[in-house]
Amino acid sequence: MARRRFFVDAVRGGMAELRGDEARHLTRVLRAEAGARYEISDNRTAYLAEIAEARGDRVVFRVLEPIVSPGLPVSITLVAALIKFDRFEWMIEKATELGVERILPVETVRSEKGLFEASRKRADRWVRIVRESSQQSRRVRSPEILPAVRLETSLGVPAEHRYWLEEVGAPPLLRRLPASPQPFASVALFIGPEGGWTDAERTQGISAGWQPVSLGPLVLRAETAALAAIGLIMNAWCI
Image (cartoon, rainbow, N blue to C red; front, side):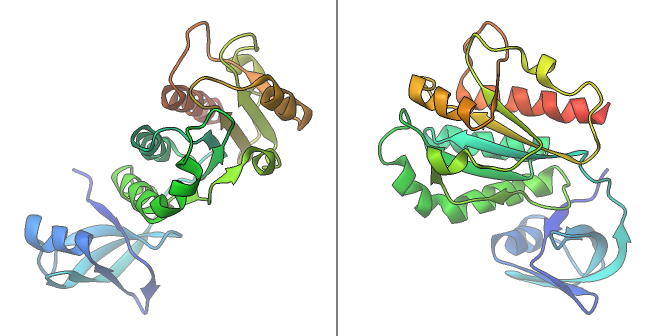
């Protein structure tokens, strides 16, 4: 059975510290004691470590050795229109499991009113969600969640391949993916809101150099479309 992995703020002098809810989970739920071995990551490198001290909401790890971890074959930025927060949070949790490197929330014309302003208060919660998802999926680095922006700002996201997801009328994403993907390329994927793009937004996206793509004849929820597209992109670079 694979060891549990935990993210720590830093590794200094071969030691690392975990505090708060995750430390309490270790001490009170898992009943972890000194000598127990776990994996830790400082968001740069993964390590095998053993517990040197475990009390209440504080666990101290002693690093034993680094763990060789394969890197992701492609760097994906998910540019996602803001949707209802329960579904948006499910989307970023699963997108993390699928390997996205960063997430940029965007306000669009058909985003519900108030979500853009409210997103600022959700920043810490979203960081916690992707951190927990990163631990579950045994990532070395947790994805970066950027502050929400307006559509006009998001159109300038840099990437070697930029895909603008449409409901219908665009070529299938599979046809747009490169036949011979270059390792460690950068990809940006733009997901629209419930209700779709306005004509003006669609024109803005195409004018900014985004490639319109689709996922077939059925209309998908935004979060479903995001995960389906991320899976296709990641697998194209894993072949």
